[in-house]
Amino acid sequence: MTSEEIILAIKDIIQTIAPDEDLSELKTDVRLRDQIELDSMDFLDIVMELRKRYGVQVPEEDYKELATLDGCVAYLTPHMQGKTLKVGV
Amino acid sequence: MSDTRKYYKGSTDGKAPFHGDPLEGIEAAYDVVVVGSGLAGLTGAVILARAGRKVLLLEQHYNLGGLATWFKRRGGHIFDVSLHGFPAGMKKTCRKYWTKDIADSIARLDGIRFDNPQFRFDTEFTREDFVHKLQTVFGLSQTAIEGFFAELAQMDFYSNSGETVGELFERHFPGRNDVHRLLLEPISYANGSHLSDPAIAYGIVFGNFMASGVYTFSGGTDRLVKAMKAELERLGVEIRNRVQVDRILVEQGRVRAVVAHGRTIACRAVLSNANLRATVERLVGQEHFTPEYAASVSQVRLNNSSCQVYMGLKEGESIPFITDLLFTSSAARFDSMELCDLHTQSRTFSFYYPKTRPGLERYTIVASTNAHWSDWNKLTPEQYEAEKAALIQRTLTSVEQYVPGVRTKIEHVEAATPRTFEFYVQSPEGTSFGTKFEGLKPSMTMHEQVRGLFHAGSVGIIMSGWLGAANYGVIAANKVDAWLHSLVEVNA
Image 1: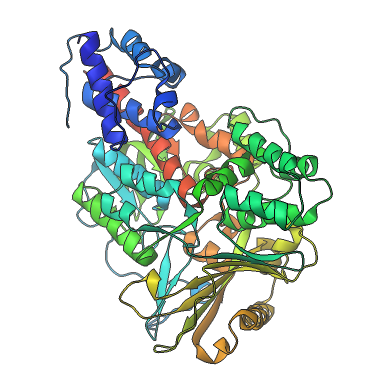
Image 2: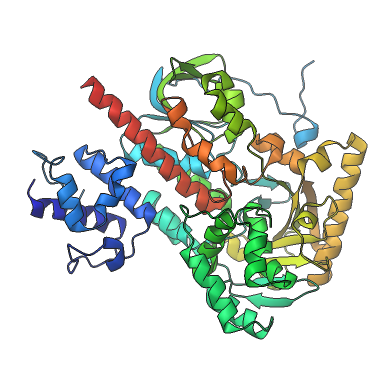
């Protein structure tokens, strides 16, 4: 999966968790929770969806790596090799 | 001797005998067995089912919901046991993990009132209104108030200073027992918080309420739990009531099965929504844990229990709107111990008007007090009945002050005590708020002791109440799912 696809994958997950948020203007280098209303339960949901959709297991000590979209790309790129983007599920 | 009575009077009569096999038709093995259907167990089950896991949910009672329950009495009375009010966050939790329909039924309470010798007013129960009251009624400076709320906002779970609630209050509002009462009394009823508990546990829950007030479920607890049950069934969860789990079987440090009604049901994980101590000591057995862990669990203090008085108005009778939630006390000063006293002068009234169950023109009132198991458990049968009757009379006298003449409209009245809660919910010592703060760590690390064994339920005060329990079910289910995922990777 390319960096752009990983961002799409994360944004699609966030959209299902926070259906009312406008994600089109999200900056990739700013903490997600500083841009939209995301609490710790929402981050847990992102982790659960990554496991469900892509079989990617993010251990608890690595949750902090997902704070920004750039962080997500850096952390997830090796885990998302060869995976197919699933959006709108 | 066969017992053919139709009605069983709760804890004094024992359980009605059950005929037939409540486990008939279940499969031999499941991915996960959820033991207990409190809001943590129910919500854990729904998450695991959505993740594609094969789930069996076992509940000893004939209803689902744990303490989130209701009961009916002759005359068309329906009583809610713990539907008093929860933070707005419950709406988001239900929207994300349950259904839109459930979330859309969550509505804000119209009124909350305090009435005690120190102050008396109606409040929105929001930060804005509390700031206003603390200035105008209590005469505090803006600086002192903002300082308190700023510190609350900073509190997070990982920065526990060890300070108690009483110390936190004393630092911000020294000598102001009236302010301490305003800030703690409602939370004591919500989750059993005492002045001696860690400030962090109080702060997080109080902060949740202050965000935007207090909410309820329109349609009553029965509608909520039935909607949850329907969603679980839609997702393929196998649900069985009236099933007492005898044992969680552990071999070589790993969960293998649960034993119930003479059957051994294989599973790769157990999510226990039974009380923390009951899970370790009764269901699994201390020998399966490290001595240090088992010792830490045996030292976890249980939270206090409750008494309730349920009052049902005769069909056709009505009362005007007073408020939804009334925190009342005739005790001159606030004191956490007074709140739990056998003859406490402090109680909350939850008033249920026809809006609670739209379509049913019925009114009920439920009074709740905090209580100690030991005070009620030591009574002889005669003393027990006498204390229950006295509790009912004190409560009726109190409610008459707010609703003159209501006594004559009440058709059904009965009381519940810590013994009642112990009997129906099977929580040790009838605890209605799980464990004290120290229960959180062993609960969250149980799977490090026995692989495949997870706990979710009222622990640590933080995870208590409807919202705390439901969210804890999600947190635990995430760990269960990660465990099941890791097993698949090994096998692949």
